Length: 133
Image 1: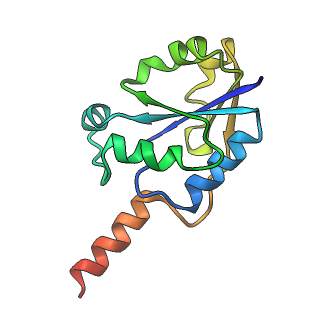
Image 2: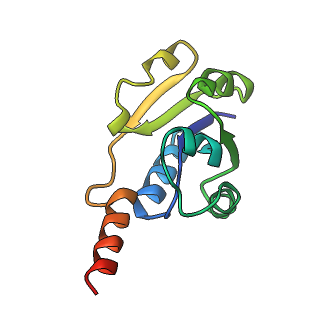
């Protein structure tokens, strides 16, 4: 079995998230999604609308996702790859080059992001609408 892993916050799920999960799953038979814990988001100064448990439940309902694990810190990626016997690490190309150190442990793939959508943009759009009426 070929295992794939990807990482993210996966808050305010949108078509860009679905696209990367679908495309990541195409690289193997089993997709693991590591999502930032609430505590890790706080360290990153990133505020998620949904709690870790809510985001985990949403991801577990997606047909491409086989397993959801917590991400507690930046350093755990090598441990996750080894522990879960991962063959392919997948991230969006906005992270291109940042995880090349994992090439010693598995294949590293950077996928193009879906153009025109991001969680940040959704939050800005919603905030703008709330402030304008």
